[in-house]
Length: 322
Image (cartoon, rainbow, N blue to C red; front, side, top):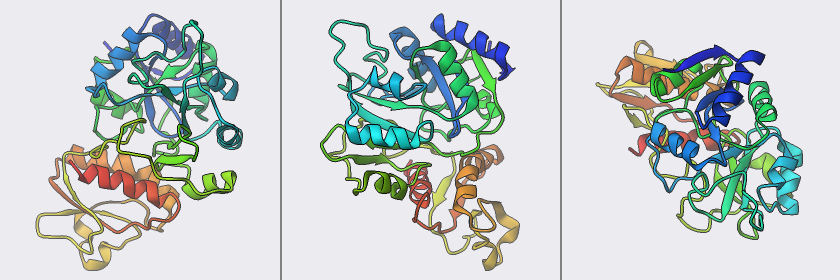
């Protein structure tokens, strides 16, 4: 039985009790809802994989309250610390070598790291997530609170639709403000690499580093969101469409598809004014609405690739690759 509670102080206390007992708690971040478990408890982490149907080779992001907590888990280089100081709390995940514990129990277990010698860490900005992390006092492993490969959830209702009966508690903090996952930057190699574009644009990170981000060294899955097919609705997506085919409905951006006389078959316009931040916030909700309507074929209007558009197009390509 899944509890759904407004994310107030009493609900946070209840959530901490559940996490301490090895249970699962879904909670809002500024990006999407996360499915949380005690990152140091392998049995609890195993419940995340089971609830999501997630492949064991795909590591989880461990959420921490701040940079000091992150430094207890990972060897953060000066460049990594610079990014954390600039963008945390916020939608940035850092992947770095696990700190040497010398026999002490790590706050992020091997299973959460998928057996890797690196760990993915983020300090979220959402007040509910921050309150939960501070109250729990340990890292919380938390991938997006959806079935693996399905569209990420931006409301408590989305979480319930995917995971009711598989999660012990959903903290309802309303719709998440960003609606797109964190950007992931790796510091495993000497040159920092962009593993996954996200809500924090590449340009802002490169400006803070005063250097360009490299591409990943190889095709190994060393962080969440790196599998080819991901974030997928049931519908077939045709990207960069200039109009609608006979059996298609449209996912528009800036009224482009409507200009082709197809306004009656537009499911949603991610941003009628062509605002990239608004489009990112609306993306997953629109994909879930497509699923709810049972539509089979969706034409997606062209979306610019600048700034956060890189992340939007990345999610759409993965959603179309099923």
